Image 1 (tube, rainbow, N blue to C red):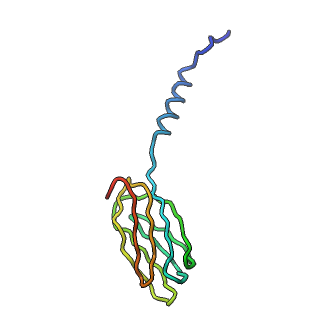
Image 2: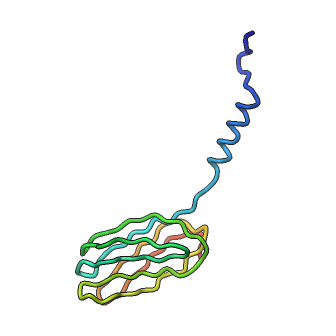
Image 3: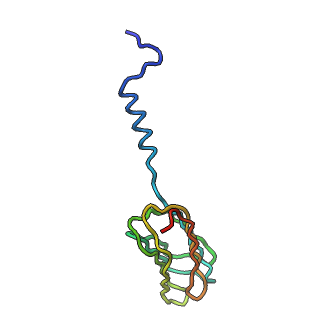
Length: 124
């Protein structure tokens, strides 16, 4: 028995529609860049955000670290690291909320200071 040209089974149609709906799901991510402008290498860099954290064992002077993450819940971002003089530095950053997406630049500066440059939608 031959099939008519252009005929598709109901299973084929369901598969195509399922693929469309699942591909339409959106995943919210924040692309973070941490820049070390402290003038010296740092150790034990940790970035805490709602429900998780990320970091690096070390970050050389004038080096960058990139990380992509997804926020669950809401809360304040916190950065900590060990400076070249051995002191632990802790800095509070912006408040983040679930479903935010975009970029976040964190610039670590001398004296235990930091600049935060979030470009996130929707705003927290």
